[in-house]
Image (cartoon, one colour):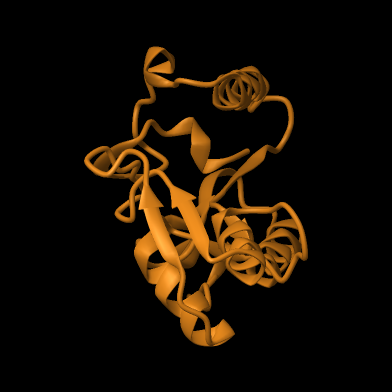
Length: 168
């Protein structure tokens, strides 16, 4: 599944949070939550482990999360357009996602687990790191400066049950 099943809010969500489908604002999130609910109807018949992945990043050359998109934009342009510098997520590297899948398969622990990074990272931090790494300064244009999107997801249950430790 995905962390998108949680609405954009400033509070910290965990796997026990009762999610109101009416608060979800896109079809992707709604379809994931519906899929989870369908699977939940069969927990007495089959072993089900739902992994809700955070925003995954890697070294992709095109597409991807905000991390890759911002880095690639900075490489090609002297200006970056974003919503708000304060938009934040708990990003997770693809290597941590792969490790969580392997551990989940081996341990077969039943339940829902948030697989995400350890701390909130906002776009401003990503931009600063990208500028430093690329040795390039860019002009940042915020389109929705006062309306940052924040989704905070606890990964403590996954750490406790799987021993997963994100590198970020």
